[in-house]
Length: 350
Image (cartoon, rainbow, N blue to C red; front, top):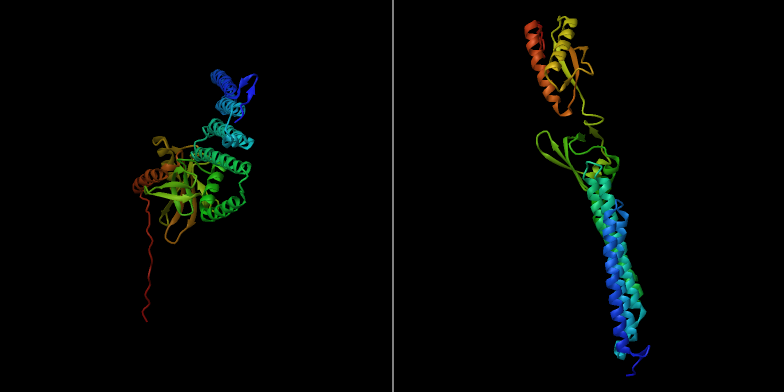
């Protein structure tokens, strides 16, 4: 085997010199990267931290790889080892390092800026979407890196792409509900029709939102039962949000009195009760002011409706209870009769 010389040095000695110089350079660059990382941490800008974190380690590794490659080029390698000098293997390393930089940059950018944006909202669905994007970005980048490596190594990737397409189609068909629910969650995150602790009615389900996830929304009914509603159903359903635009809720209380009762006096009593209870009970409002309507002449009663407001949508039953108890007391004191449905049957004797 012939011995090569570089600058008057034998091949192996020249390779050793190149290797030592490269290691020293890599060590110096590593120190510079650490210094830049500390300087970046001292600034309020996040972008410089992301850039240093993405390029720092790969640059050091790149210097070591180049050092080893050039050291092998000048070394006296046996013929059976000459294949390692093929440039395509060096290109594979560049692709891996490039993928490392891109994947790290995307991940850190999503962590820094994504979570900064999601912290401005109360819903946790956008946090989950950012977490999903972090994972998806890495997988996509490394899958592209894998395909590029196969291409550089002159491995036919057509069957792989065809197989991946068939598998992707099968997975998409099998998981179409999952994707639909995920898109529903994305729409909820952007449109924000409700948030956690809002009281909502979705179709026949009525209760408080306890969790808004990427796949489903959980509602706690007034009977303390958890209903899991797929997010895709939100796209096709009418959603009533009792917590928007604010927490106030109108409470309608129907009252029926016997025929012959003084209508004006009934309206006065009901207004007195509403104002009296509003002064005693903090969750009953005087603004908007309570109103009484004489609605109709019913089959067996004169029908009224007392309308008042609560400052908390979750206390409407408490409002009705407090008002109805007081109505019963006042009507008994005033001698006002509350009739019950009745039917008169007349028999004709022939």
